Length: 266
Image 1 (tube, rainbow, N blue to C red):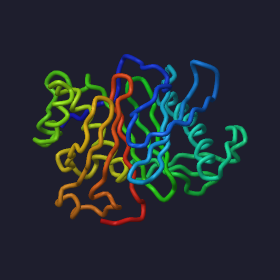
Image 2: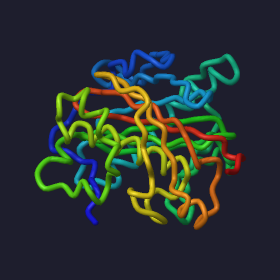
Image 3: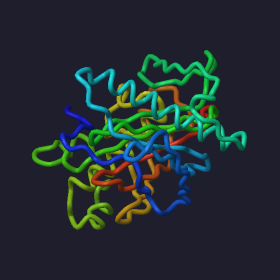
């Protein structure tokens, strides 16, 4: 079954616009260089947990994987600086952060951040629209971020293999019947949800994840995600049976962020 590939030939601008103006969004502006290289970090409260997120253009390079790796490191440096400010009331410059930073991946491909070989804040990444996206939450949480563009769902996309019947109904009313736009919203929420759980779509299909839109507006949404009973029986989960996911418009795409208690169980 083909799933969306979050890429686009058109690059968006650097991440310097606000996301949703709802759900208690707070913005912390930071810069790791002169314009237009500014990277802004924003703070969301997701499921009662503070989450920092940011994004930036993926630098052109003959080696795409190295370019993405370099961008991830760059975003992590900025996120860690602001994360310190939240936790300790200070803001250290990147050069002052006394960390040896490493990213490791578990058997399901979930990234884990190591600082001086110790488990650090939770992280998640996404690539969409020529940009790299990153989210960070406290070490007691698991976080997921994803972004999707309507263009990924045009043409003969197999909606029946990815979306349950009711999932697009409310979004369609708010997107003037644009099915692809509605699909981008719901798909980004599903991806963020399974990334927070930690197994992505390796262990079950998108149809086993049900998204119930609670609030859908022009530029922000709140969706409740839940795994099917069959999926819950099949895999050992953290507290991810049901989770509220925040989604927001950014440029020409939808981005979604999910967060959950790492130690909770269903």
